[in-house]
Length: 504
Ligand SMILES: [Zn+2]
Image (tube, rainbow, N blue to C red; front, side, top):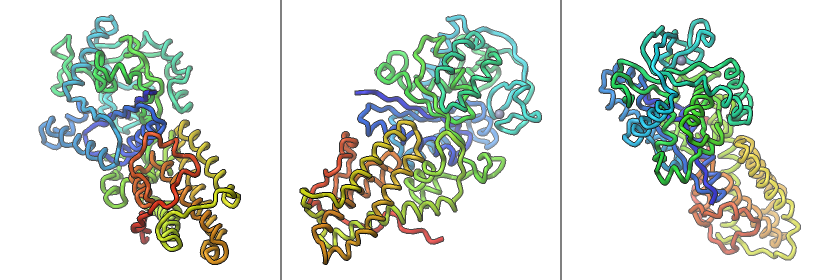
């Protein structure tokens, strides 16, 4: 069985999750489910980054004990993962012992290798990034990511010899480690400008992981946070590590591209650990074209949206609306529009009409058909199979919104087929053809229920339950995408519409 290991970024717990966090996790879940559908042995990891100074600072501002504060917010991320119906196998918190141990081990390995040395650092430090940034990177004197003025910091620190790895990193990037290409090129251009050694510890802070060779220092975010991808697998001796590493995809946002595409590979090379196969950089969810930020007061709470519209509606909207790898916009208006057109009108109606006809014309059981001549539904069959082939390609290319578009084209051709074949006329004039029409519609719905599973798992279940077919996702889900597998006489159990229209 082929293995597949996918990770998300781990989130800061300085605040509860917003819709941008939900977006990344939903994308990762869709990829994980797609690979499960392909019968691969999938391991899907997500988690929270809890040792950051940023969290400690937020706790102090809130007047709460830091540990209590991060526990509280981390719980909200875990809760969100459940609400979004994520299929993650593990959720790592970087305050856990299992992580602290590996983070210190990696630090020690780098030190023993001679890649960590003590020195002094002075420079611009952005508290949002938790990183020193160069003067070149500043925009009007501010951090381009956080729009805040960096502090000038000078302190004793340990450096990691990042500069040593410039050439090999450049080669890795040129070989295609990072996707999409535009994001890769940004990094290539920066690496060509040369790499500086990296400050990897901080002095005089209370919160964080102890540097194993110096009591006065805490490990800085890189050798802490990035290490979660292997600490969760119990590096170096754990069965999980042996089985699943290297990661097949690290899914991250563009704001942390540099750290994953340059610093992380350098750490791994130095420790002689295999490199991840792919780093995929997704875009941001914007609100009215603006980045989500506390200071802009445009934070959208995904939990409220799930309460109101359901997890699958939010999942569908984000995956359908935002081309993967690019930025996209969120608004409740466009979510409601998509809900009413795509979910209520197209998908919901197809299911409802088909099941209603089975109830009305065939006493609630899928009719038997004469298989000697299927010419009347041949067209629909080939369209369906052709759609599947195209969707497989789109899914492997992580082109989710195109895959969804294709699924909806199939749904709409089925709806059109109802209009054209007029079952309400056939019932009197050509009952033989009516049976074939109904059978074909039912088959398409069965295909759709499988194809949407990575995107909308509970909707897939609900559709299959109403159609009277096994609700459980079978391991051979892809093999079920064979035309003609539906069993005549299957009893349907129609329920109320899965997506009742929202009144605007
Ligand atoms: Zn910043």
